[in-house]
Image (tube, rainbow, N blue to C red; front, side):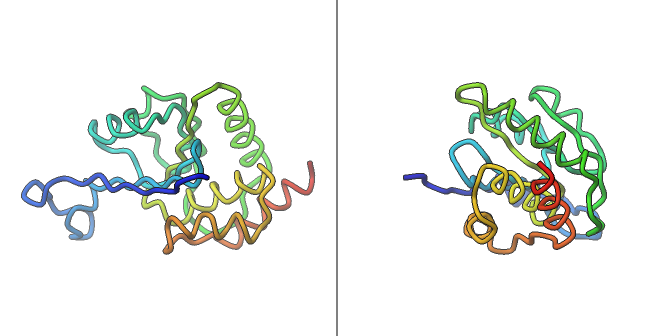
Length: 170
């Protein structure tokens, strides 16, 4: 039996500063959602304590689907797939590179992969859905697995369709 869990790493309230757009704590928060023993998704890694927490969780590899690379990720084996969250289909090479990286990571015993975007709701959730589909889960099971740990996650239609097209072509 796999125990699904989620974690929130947050700065104590008295240390929180205003983030972009006046949202308090936006820059200090990192969330991690495990969908299996070896696959998790969530929000950006911005602070050293975020890196420390991922290390404590056993994360060894990171798939970063944000527009801007992070120097904090240099301590992990990382692939950076540079895309805006614009709800447009992704090219086939996007899925090919992500899947190749993921499968190579899983060849190593005890490796764990973290898929990250800015907020951990759309891009990382959609990529996690794709990786679960590539691992053999059906569409409904893959989506419910993601949404079980992160109910507000959204599998973006264009990302889902282009990922499914990639899987059908293989």
